[in-house]
Image (cartoon, rainbow, N blue to C red; front, side, top):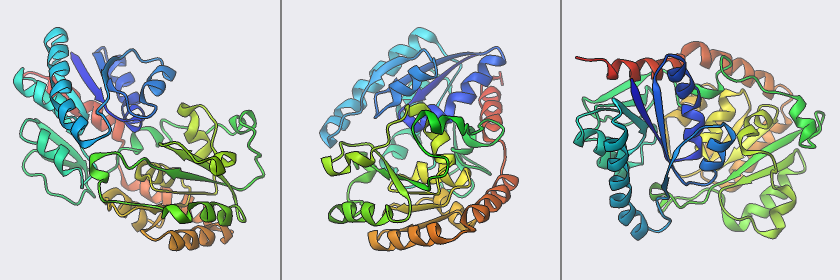
Length: 342
């Protein structure tokens, strides 16, 4: 069977990496297409994947609208050339469009309720839309819910074991309490009108946080000079090893908040955007969310001053994993099933 996997974001490299490897282990041919977004190409290179570069979606609304047609045309050419039996991707309108036009099955993943424009572009053309059971929106008859979330596909202990020896390599002390801080760029179409940290409070937030744990900042955008001493400087494909040993995650990125929760690390999510999988982690006691910078700081201090915080989160993580499925195995089997005749 020939399968096309379309990647539009760095997090999707992680999401699909074990899916791709397992499909290939089962004898299937996998073609990877990818857009340039943040460090997506770098991640694919680090993992040794061959892929077809599709270009970027652009930054402005006008650029994004123009690129809809450009990216659709590029995908059509690729599907015509390689003739995949199944196409899959997270929110990939171009895979759905090309699959529909060529009469191929398309399995589209979705976990972001507010990506309404993206959903409208692919929903009429997709064969199936896979969402976590906690997804808050009803997408109709094509929607299939499963017990899990995307980040479990690569951070479940079956697939990921953190390596403490890497901390020495990065100059991070094993005895030092540290926190991972995430700033996003707010350039995605679904980010319009949304916000996280109050800009004028960011520096004070970092300074206050530093009284309790060493902050390491990871950012989609350019950091002002005053934040440079806190910048996280590690290989992009190894960040989860660092996160696993953090005392805390705090940030605007929902994916990293979910990753931290699955690793058993206390998380604080500051963002006006609400997501079903974030609510799920909050329900297990792994995460706290707010839209207020000062409240986020209070949550951070609560986590960092609670000596039992990590133990509580590790226990909560075990309950979470026990309740959910092997997401990688589920995705592989679903893709294989779609490609079978009949």
